[in-house]
Image (cartoon, rainbow, N blue to C red):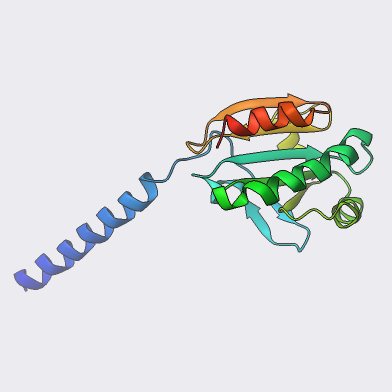
Amino acid sequence: MGRRVFWVLAGIAIFAGVYAFFSLSRPHLEKDFSLYDLNNRRIRLSRFSGRPLIVYFFSPRCKDCKEEAPLLNELYEAYREEGLVIVGVGVKYPEEVREFAERQGIRYPVVVDQDLSVSRDFGVFFLPHLVFFNRQGKIVSAATGKVSPEKLREYLESIL
C-alpha cells in the first residue's frame, strides 16, 4: 500500500512539474481577449503569445481602414514566416465585417467586437487603431488613425 501511494504521489508531482514548465515558459500577453471569428469559432488572443502580434481595430465604414487593410495584408504575407500574427478586430456589424474582409482579401484572422467591450478595454476611440505586442507579450506601441507604410514598418521592426 505504501509503495502504491508513493508512485501515485510521484506521478502527480511529475505531472505538476511538466504542467508548470509549459505554462510558465510561455510569455503571457499584457492584454487578452476572446471573440468569435467570421466562422463563428472563438479566438483567444493569448493563443498567439510568444509571437510578434499586431491587433488591428477597424470598421468597414472607415475610409482609412479600407486603405490600410491591403498594406497589413502585405506585411502579414511578408513576415508570417518570422512568426508575425495580425488579428483584425472588426467593430460592431458582423456581416459588414465579413464583406469587408472578403472584399479586401484579408488573410489574417478576423474577429468581431459587437458590443465594443474589447475596443473599450484597449482604449480605442478612433479607427483604425493598431496595437503592437512584442514576443514577450508586452504592448510596445499603439497608433490611431492612418499610419504611413514607413511608420508601420518601423513599428513592425520594434516587435520582430
